[in-house]
Amino acid sequence: MPKSKRAKVVSLTKVAKKTKEHKNALLREVQENADKWQYCWLFEVGNMRNAHLKTVRKLWKDSARIFFGRGAVMAKALGTSPEEEHRPGLHKLAKQIKGQVGLFFTDSPPTEVLEWFADFQQPDFARTGNRATRTVVLPAGPVMQQHSVPPEPFPHNEEPQLRRLGLRTRMERGVPTLDVSHTVCEKGKVLTPEQTQLLKLVGLKTVTFKVGLRARWDAATGEVEQIEGQEVPAEDAGGEVVEEDEDEEMNE
Image (cartoon, rainbow, N blue to C red; front, side, top):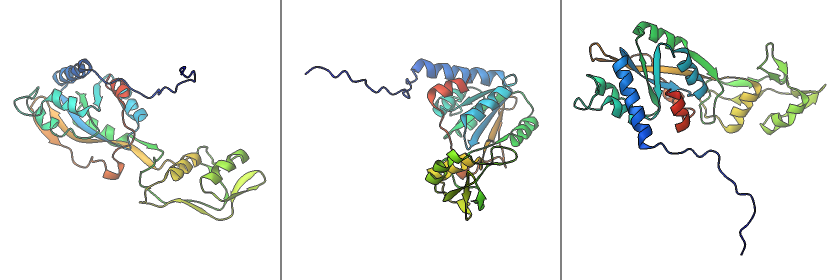
């Protein structure tokens, strides 16, 4: 039987596995930065978005170095025991590397770092599986787009999409209109795909990207200080997963 000449579907999402050389290179980089900088901070991220984390890296590119993801390699680079640690005290930080966390190397004073990250919070659209941070109700009348300032009504060609997402609209003078108010989501409840799509379509950003600083290692003393009040709430943990190719760019 002759082979089919049909076009074969090829996945474009496949990522080549990192080789041992890649892992060793990352390990060496982490250790080189541990030798170079005075402080190493362990951080976690709430409502992870790759674009926002890349912004952080760019804003600090001249005065810090960030590594994110590949926790097992980072922990090994620092050393997870007093016998294996790369520099005194680093094993105390390495033992806390669990889940999606990162390392932030810098010489900047701790007060400056704490204040900067407390201030850097970026609103974003919720994802499926997030819990609603507030109750959102669309009032009766024209359905408004919040992207623009001031808000503008949706164009007529958007009505089919609004109806697919659960809105009972009708056209009034070419504008999708609600006769009664519509509750998009209720605070504390898990968001469905339809709810997150509707929130994004309307233009309502209900979650916040935030970096939570968990601990700081000081090269001068070898001590690790736990940071209080910077924890990322459990419901905000997670978000986008850093793929291996993105992780390599993140660690540049």
